[in-house]
Image (tube, rainbow, N blue to C red; front, top):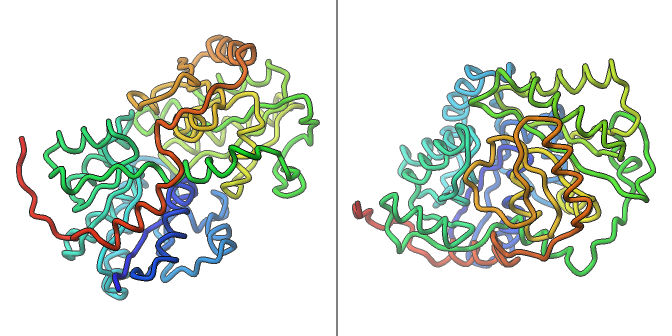
Amino acid sequence: MRKVCVVVTARPSYSRIKTALQAIRAHPDLELQLVVAASALLGRYGTAIDFITADGFKPSARVHMVLEGEHLAAMAKTTGIGLMELTTVFDNLQPDVVVTVADRFETIATAIAASYMNIPLVHIQGGEVTGSIDEKVRHAVTKLADLHFVASRKAAERVVRMGECSETVHVTGCPSIDLAAQLLNDRTLNFDPFKKYGGVGTEMDLSKGYVVVMQHPVTTEYEEAREHVNETLHAVNELGMPALWFWPNVDAGSDGTSTGVRAFREWVKPQQMRFFKNMEGTDFLRLLCNSKCLIGNSSVGVRECSYLGVPVVNIGTRQSGRDRGVNVIDVDYNRGAITEGIEKHLSNGTYPSDPLYGDGHAGERIAGLLATQPLHIEKRLTY
């Protein structure tokens, strides 16, 4: 039986891997070792660990590694702490294979630790193109990985062009699309977000429509994070429609984003905004399904929203280069452009489902490959 160690380091990483975790746990030839680390353990960022344990998963280890500060040095030092701590965890658990997800800075700590310990490494969601430091991390992890489970055919082609053997690259789709697929036949908003998740701000009537906002700092533009979010705050406030706003990730610049939100809330006192830290993945997708538009720069706008047909106004450079569907309108950090994009979507309505990032069966494919694929394939230079 193969021992599969999956490292989850942040709230978005859990939704990106949840159905694969379920499939690994259920597979007769696999043993799941779940390591929960970094901001996934912190209440300030939504305590993803609570949702993980509520889903019945029992972490094999918890790794506290986040250095406070939300600036570039804190990100680098957090990566260093993670490298040290995860090395100890892998030494204790002795996994047959380590799985790391996507492109966050904690991800490269997982990849380096596994690689130097000669533990085969599987990378999920490699081969994609985006802005900021994430792209460097993603491509670096690709070069450290032994197996690549990518979300799309284009991503697979990029990984092969980077010199990886085609035998090691498998198009599985993204596990987050599996969760979205479960909602296609029943999009009903079957919970009250205010009663279930609390939040801060006005409790609004959502029956006539609302928007969802999720804006993170861009690490290569972190000093401008407050200025960037201020443009979005003004555009959304002037819209006059209920807005459900989610707190940013733990990245360099998140202090600027958070400070901008708090200052706006204090001085402007918006009557149509409610702020949340986190939600269970399926609840969040239901909220998106029933919204008029997603505003911000989260990858959920180009991934899950393309599958669900949810209109998206994507702001700035964070998703630059990433494959996207017709549901996405790209705008700059400008309140006028943001408002124009929202109004255009409000007149367009929802879009057809686009399987750009998967068909809803990624989790089971990933578990099947983990059980059957050779873990050591000699790397052959193809460039």
